[in-house]
Length: 309
Image (cartoon, rainbow, N blue to C red; front, side, top):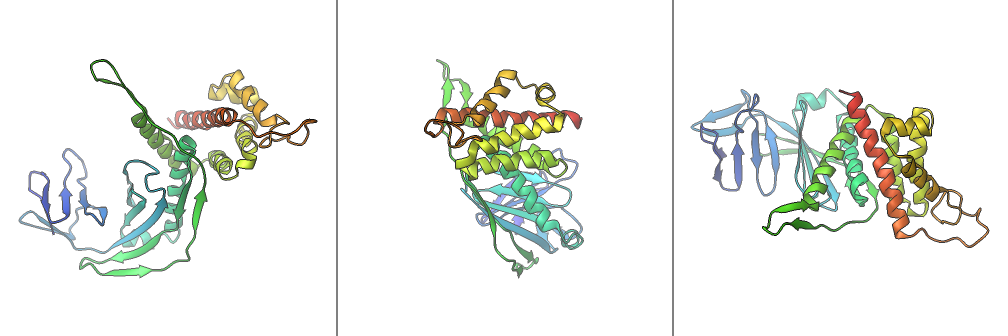
């Protein structure tokens, strides 16, 4: 059982907590324990007696595992009309009413694809590897019993790198720049936008997949990064139109072409056409190409957001 006062204050009882947020049109029951995190909407099937809330209805729970567990670096909460989801510490949990889940045979796949879109959006910024396993599913009864459904196992695997953080303070100790906070905010923004638009914009899905392949297939990294630029050019009609629509400078646009088409680079599009020996692209060259390609996808996301307003 969980204990909540009528004023909405938070009380603890054993390992569990329940919170009724203040000033919300729909008050959410937020339950947390060391083993489990989830939501439930207060309904007639929730019994309130003396401040005690008891869940009186079945709930479908989908769970995913992913690595590295700190891929998003902080908990991500997603609240939709049809489901509630939390992403945290290598685990994802989605809670769905049985009638909603049963009325949509493709819901499990849709949620998996939507979740992977979030990973792709975050990867655009982090250039970091991840592994997302297929979900498990069970029906949780009010008495704690679980009806487990078994699916064929699988997963999505992507590879990549990492980064370091710094905090810049002034002489009084005030934070001027917090690279980790800025990175987390940017990750969250890209993750949200990717999930929002991937389902209805095939070009964005293609751009993110090309970026993912550049991480997964490093021997052809510049080839995959160039695919992003080429797809945008074709979508808008030509290079000039694409640059104008996205607000990309001509120097940045040309620089990615130069790097991707350098015949002396092993990761490039025209390797083997050079009369001299091939060489690996330097770390600086690869980072420059990645940053330009990232900016292309980011500005396209911003373009979609403007068109949607």
